Length: 132
Image (tube, rainbow, N blue to C red; front, side, top):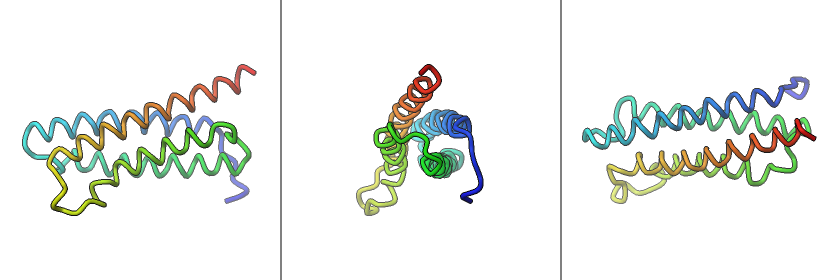
């Protein structure tokens, strides 16, 4: 694994895919809530896919850090990504008596906000590297 070198563009691409998936997951979960079927079908699958993409994004980011890239902005950027994942895991941590039908939609929304923040902080950092 140490011999494999990845480009920062991969991190940006996975980040863009994660952002798109977060938008779709949020929309699907609010739609499912309105239709009375939260946490089922495509809305549930979208949250699983989003969690997997966040894990992949973190793995790529860790590899970039291992290559010596991204040290300056790692705290805000990577904590934002981990925050997005933690919000999606929140429903599983809560006891069943505290889970509400709207919880997947709200956690998807909060996670989306973290993902947007993290994505744009990362993009600003990349632009800064390219410009100077």
